[in-house]
Length: 82
Length: 371
Image (tube, rainbow over all chains, first blue to last red):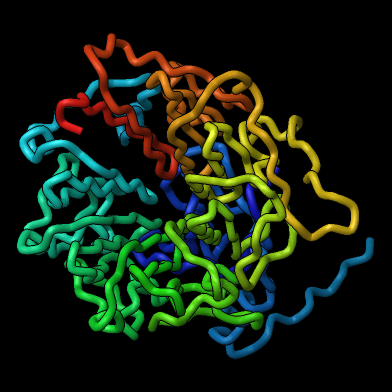
């Protein structure tokens, strides 16, 4: 079971870990990367213990950053019908 | 001094006797403050030593360090006689006998009280209180509380993150403030002690009444202003964790606030639904089980574990045990207080004290000739 639900705005960006972090009651940090967030992952884990938190965020906020880099939005793939 | 804590190399699960040369030469310890991963020791001679994680400057030695393993005297405060210290998640507070307040460490949420959001790696005097006499500081995860001495009006101040109501300064939701503001709702009562941990805050009055504010316990809604616990009991000590609080009555009984996860973090199956009176928003104090006939003298709360000392000098611990922080020789959780083996016999009368941080615990044993 998730230790806590934490909003992304309450997490801190850690340059060294390249992750969003939040204090874990063991003294270490719950961590989740931008790549995880783009994939829709909502669990941030602590590398030192069994606990994890649920990150509350809007996936669009992270996908937008990606699409800004691409000048053309990805075209929908045609569905092939057998 | 005994210590059982997690290190980077191994998990220490039982009480180990540590002899720190720098600590023993500093004289008897009057107070230990345990934070997220750092410790502040205050000696009876008013000197301060710090050790542990220093990545935000919370050790106060003028540098950012990953970790200092041995207690190191805080030379920048040497000219002061320090009377009170507190350790938050990654910031520190020090109070001198002349009522000056110094802070250092992580300032990202304004929790250092200097009017900005900078972090500091050496203690700096908080100029806001320069004309007042500070008695205590309490450092939480991202906020701080200050108690002024001999002040009937505006005794308690808060600064730092206020998102969960932990500053108690307004009914409205406050993100964070970097200059102290008065905590409201404590008018007409005399406060003798303040506590902060996680996103919780508490104050104890001279009459033994307990006020709490900040994040709600057991999933209840947050309290943005101090609320007096409806209990008619008279408390002499209070201590807070990240999801629970403990209160000690004058006759040595221990009560817990919140704590439906206490001692079951590793086994969610056992998680009990939040206890709540129907139609009540008020947190409930539950008597800690297994202590019938035992008089408790001292209590301590870590992020997710608890410790107490009985009148016989026995240490008992309970709560989350994954990192050996209960000192019971294993990594199990405990829902009731269990006696810790000291591993040696106390010679003569001694004062035993326990101090809990995030996932670690310290005990001090001071022979009474030094008390």
